Image (cartoon, rainbow over all chains, first blue to last red; front, side):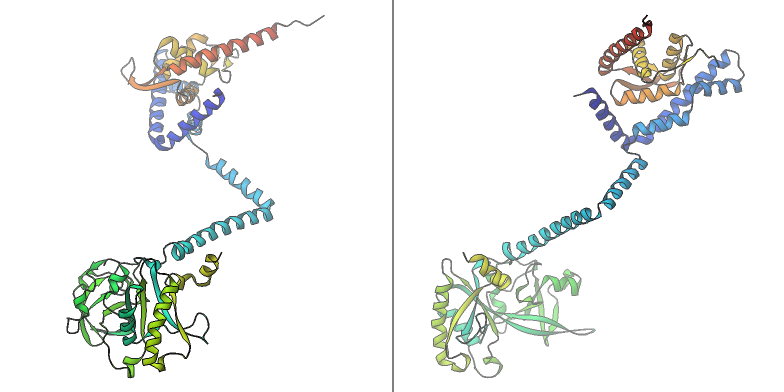
Length: 357
Length: 114
C-alpha cells in the first residue's frame, strides 16, 4: 500500500470513529489545554512575572486555542457541511447544464424500477401463487357451453339436482363443491347491515385445504339440517368491521333472522367467492320449479391427478346430456361441457398465449 | 519579539515530536513543548497549541498512543508514547529529512560559475 494512501485511509478511519466519540475528546482536549496554560503561567510566575502578565504570556506562547479546536474538528470530522453543500451544488449545476440527458436518465431509472416492481408483483400474484388453495392447479370450473355461444360463454350455475348428479356420477373429480351467493342481513343493536355471504356445501373447507385462523372450520355435522346454526367469517371482514375482536368467537349473530354462532375466522388469503361470511348448506334433491330450480350453484371440482381437461370435459358432457333429457329447458340444443382452470380465470388470454408454442 | 526566531517548518513538527517521544519515553504535551524549546535553544518560535494538533494527527495514524496519567507535580495529564508503527515512521521521516536537507544544503553551497 502506498504510504500516502495508507495515511489517508487511517485519517478516514479516525474520522469515522470520531463520529461516535467526539464529545468526550473535546472535553479531554479542553482539560489538556487548561493544564498546559496553567503550567506555562506557573513557570512565568516562577521567573518573576505578575500573575496577570504570566497568564497573558502563557496565552501568547500557547497560541490561538480557538484555531486549535477548529483544526482538531477538521481532523475529526468526516465531511464538513460546507464541503457537502458544495458537492451538492456542483451536482445540481451539472444536472442543470445537461437537463435533457439528466431527465432521460432519471425517467429511465424510474420507469425501469417501477415496471420491474409492478411486473414482479403481478407475476407473483398471478402466475406463481394466484390461489393459496391445496392443489389449486387442479381446481376447475365446468360450464355448459352452447354451440352458438361465444368461446368464453356458458352457464356456470347449476341447480341442486345437477350438482348432486355431477358429484355422484363423474369419474374425473376427487371432489366437487358448490357455492351460492347469499345476501345476508345482519341485525344488531344499532340496526341492520348487509354481508355478502356464501352458502357452501359439505367439504368446501377440506376442498381448499386451508387451516382456520381462529376457532374451527365447518365440520360435516354443521351441514346437517337440524344442527345448531353456525357460520365462518372472512379475515378482512373480521378485521375491518369487527376490529379483529377475538371475543366474538362463539358469539351469536342474527343473520337473516336466524341466530348463528361464529365458530371460525379464516386466514387473510382465504377469500373464496369474495364472500364475507360462509354458511353451511347441504344440498338435497328437490323440486325443479321456483327458486329451487334456478341454476344458482357455482360448481367447482378438483381433477383427479393425471386427468386431462379433455377427459374431464368428455366425461362431464356425457352426464350433462343425460340431464338435458330430464330438464331440456335448462340446456341449449347443441352443447358440450367445457372446463376452465381456476388459475386461468385470473390470467385469461395471457395464459393461452404464453402456453401455446 | 526576537527577530532571530524561525517559524516551525511545515511538516517538521511531527518529526520533532516523534523523535522526542522516541528519545525520552512517554511525555505529556507540556513536556514535549519544553523539550523542543530546550533543544532549539529558543531559536524556534513554536505555538505550543500546534503540538496538540500534531499529536492528534499522529494518534490517528497510529504512530503514537495516549494514556491518562499523573504528572510530576501530581496533576492529571495525558501521556503520549511512540508506537511500533511510529518508530518505523520515524526512520522513514528521518531518512527523508536528511535527504532533503542534504539536497538543500548542497544547493545552497553552490557557487556562481565563472
